[in-house]
Length: 263
Image (cartoon, rainbow, N blue to C red):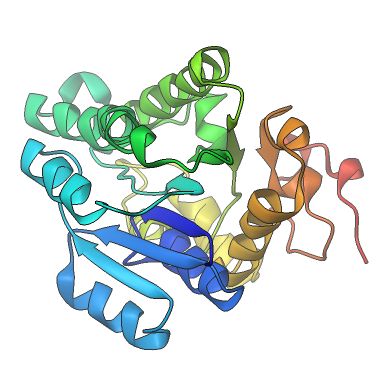
């Protein structure tokens, strides 16, 4: 029986690419997202290996639906890929409802979904992967709420590492500047709303954004090819730890690219 991976945010971007990558490696993927039409299109790519659950992970109803759908399954991998970046602009001017929504999506939902799914983990062990961001380590003008939620997610990863049973390991990963729908939205922002929009526009023109499929290959390597000790030993960063050729960001001084290995 093949292993099982549960992926949130699987209808687009990194989550979708990872679902396809793991399915191609004979992993049964449980793909979760709110957009049913996009989930169906994803499932059609590999119907034998990709199962879908249309649910809003920020709601009690959505979490209950996921729990019911998992009945009888054993999970090996849980990947928290769902995330939003709005509200953009000055945080102290943001609508309270928008601030609550990003906290619910980027932080509370992963915590509660992990609570819901831990009983379904295989007795042989499992892995939890949180998708974080370089914005968790440095403030990004115009994306304050996103920075805060990702920084808190990093701390939650550390809490997991101290509280989980030894057979379940957790870590987080910085996937880099990936060419996703979220990235596209950032490029289309005004400079007043998001000052880094110009930098991202240039990165797109210069083709230095990472394709989602390349990011997915890196994440699959972490999930499938590292030992439990290696998996949880660090915060992974695609620019530092990927062993294949990738585009490098334009602002190279932000990262220690000497650590990037190329083949």
